[in-house]
Each structure stands twice: as structure tokens, then as C-alpha cells.
Length: 68
Image 1 (cartoon, rainbow, N blue to C red):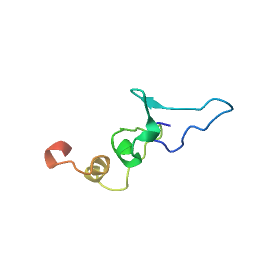
Image 2: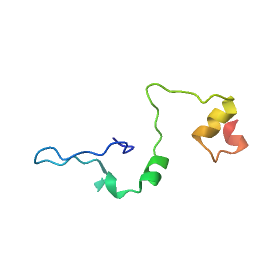
Image 3: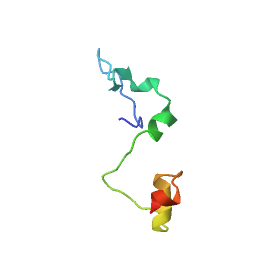
């Protein structure tokens, strides 16, 4: 729910909301929200490729010293 793959739906007379510091998550730009959250799925998958390529997938702006 935090990554907004699904938004809370109104349920009867109540409305579902997710709040960060009292701010409705829907008020954040979706791309920026997803860039700001580290997400580790329960079934992690690796990209076919080198360890370096997998690390770069997690942080496309990583420098050489970050990878080491």
C-alpha cells in the first residue's frame, strides 16, 4: 500500500487513508514517492547478470566506491 500499487478504496461510510506525518500519501508525486522508499519483497529476485549489474539496478547513480 505504501508504494501505491493500489490505493485505499472508500469502504461504506469510511475512507481508507495512508498518512506520512499527517499528510495523505496521495498528495505525493508517485515517482518521487517510489524513489524515496526502499522496498524488499518477500521473494527477492536477482537480475540476470553480474553482481555489479544487480547493485546498479538498486542504485542507478552509484559510484564505484559505493559498489565496493
